[in-house]
Image (cartoon, each protein chain N blue to C red):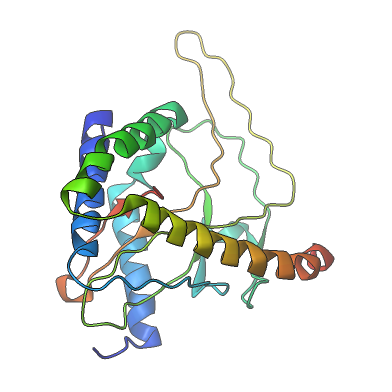
Length: 88
Length: 143
């Protein structure tokens, strides 16, 4: 697959902005309050558990991978912290 | 968008992602995007200065608006783009770290029958676009 050029990426971003300006809505998700978003997250977690088993996926293993990646990102951010603090 | 519709959409997206994970060997890698492709400010007149650099991108804004107008929005957005270099679909899990420094005052005045309201959001969104289809726009929240 050919890598999109810088101008193609910029065009995709412009398309997102134009569409939102045309439709007059920054994001539908912003119209859902935080407690409802928490409700969605909670229920998804509960309802998706059986789907993982149904598909034969080891959810714990996937969660371990996600946790490992999050740790790597945290480590990266920690390394950047002093630089960021100086800039602020 | 109603809560039911939002839930339905989130449910369909998650199911599709889980199904995709079963389609081939599981390979994963963290990816850090620390340089935005562009900064978009609306209205553009409030932008004083902006800067794009790895791990140090910012926008300075000054805006004052005392007119009581319905649904007026101002925003500053940092766009980070990632393009899938593979010939197959990928499942992505996104988080973002945002830092805000400055002063922002929002005032909503009570009306006779309908009170005014103002709100301030700091949010992260993931939007997927498919160039061949012009724009397939989908919003996903981090699970």
